[in-house]
Amino acid sequence: MEEPLEFPSRPQRVDCVGALVYDEQHRLLVIQRANEPGRGLWSLPGGRVEPGEDDPTAVAREVAEETGLTVEVGDLVGEVERDAPNGRLYVIRDYQAEPVGGTLTAGDDALDARFVSREEFENLPTTTLLASTLAQWNALPG
Image 1 (cartoon, rainbow, N blue to C red):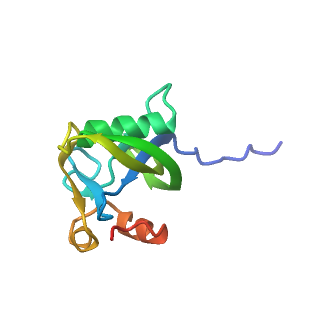
Image 2 (image 1 turned 90 degrees about the horizontal axis):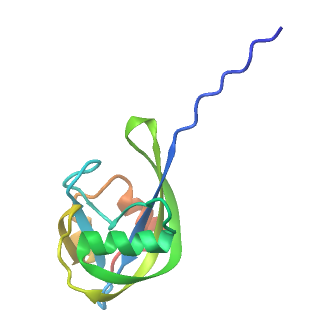
């Protein structure tokens, strides 16, 4: 009788979204995270997809909650996976989004929110692999 094969358990996947929002000067919208993971670091506005939401709905909700802006969600730009607490895995899909209203102000999950030029972006402490991922996607500001 053979021993059953042991497979490492696959991490629980957590669906998340992010938004690539640019202004007229092609500055990128970033938020300073108020909560872990990455408290104090700068990132794209975004977060978890809630039950019953599709990605565009989640993107629009997260941008509004974190920045006060209303956006029209466009195409998927790319997807990344990042380790999450408790052995889970964040699966983050980032979308183009166009600002169409609202007033830029840091919301509940953000210490600050602003549009930044490439030079400003390069001088911010950003979340793990954000700068290299945006460079790969040709999505850096400027």
